[in-house]
Amino acid sequence: MKTFKSFLLCFAFVAGCTKETEPGRIYTDTLPATQENPVEVFAEDTTQNVPAGPDVFDEPWAQTAEFDSTITTPDTTTFKERYKDITPEAVNTKKMTLPIGGRISGPSVLRVQILLDRVRFSPGSMDGNFGNNTRKAVYWFQHQNGLKTTGIVDNQTFKKLVEKAGNFGKPIISYKLAEGDIKYPFTKIPKDIYERAKLRGTYYENLAEKLGEDFHLSPELLKTLNPKTDFQKAKVGDEVFVPNSYTDTSGDAPAPIARLVVSHEGYYLHALDTAGNIIYHFPSTLGASYDPSPTGNLKVRSKTIDPWWHYQPKILERVKDTEKDAIIPGGPNNSVGKVWMALSKRHYGIHGTSAPETIGYAQSAGCVRLTNWDALFLSTKIEPGVEVDFVEAKRDVAKKEKAEEEKPKKKKRE
Image (cartoon, helix red, strand yellow):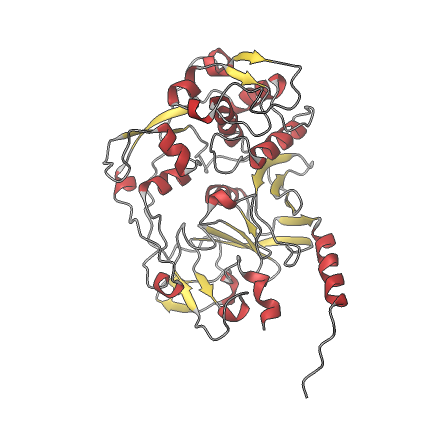
């Protein structure tokens, strides 16, 4: 029945299969949060502590070199920095150029993205460009901190970001490649779904992709920060420059998460405390108008790390019903990413992705999709039972129902 097909293209129908293909390999969204991870992964902690330095406001990068209050909407004609100016030294030592907004790029933009990442108002995949995800993160950070909500980083917003981020050292750090980085089971992911089903795991394809997800940046920015590094020939102990991103997922939340709010129009997910304050902001990809996300109030039912994906042609749009089912092993390049948080409405969930660059810019078939690192972080801060409110989705459902009513009625088969 093709009418139901696009309902779950991005949910991967994790809930649709509750059997075991091999002992200990369970692929269902009903697993409890404490279930043993059935997929072999490298669990080595490669997080490196950054020694405390002087007061953060004494750092050169935290000081403003230029601020033109007459510029209300920065653009490439008024902003003096360019993407080609991004180097580890420039990001760490040059003073800020403000205001920041519009379609601009450069070291100052990357600093803002790193600060947003550290205060957990996520800009998604950091790339040194002031895109929609960064602008929305700035807007909601301003909203939560009582600042004028413009989505533009002025002097006051920048100072508040620095204050909230605390003393974390340099924006760009030198990271030594660990054994877990080099000996990770990199795997070429076939395009053919049935060849993919034969894999041991849907692991990262290469070191650059792994480091990009570990430190929340695009592969292009990673190469920009390390122009002389050949990641295909890298070895244990080699040093690479990466953003000083927030990688700790074991600390406590600033306050208990009372509920999650998912905005279809805003393409974001917010974690709120009991007073309605925004604790965390994440860019997200949600359902299209023809396949909207759920409506109303749901709850998180369970959490599964590295879920298996049940590929079912009979429920997928643009796939022939005659094709066979397949079971795709877990991993970061699985279609539901590294974590699945099942909701109380069957087949719906919050999950990761194999394409972090699409978050906030594409549409799903009703799922709530985050970057793998944001989804994993969120999963450590919530427990089954937390409420999830979908806003604006009712209007989208109404539009769909009206469109269905206006369609010519098909005659029933005798």
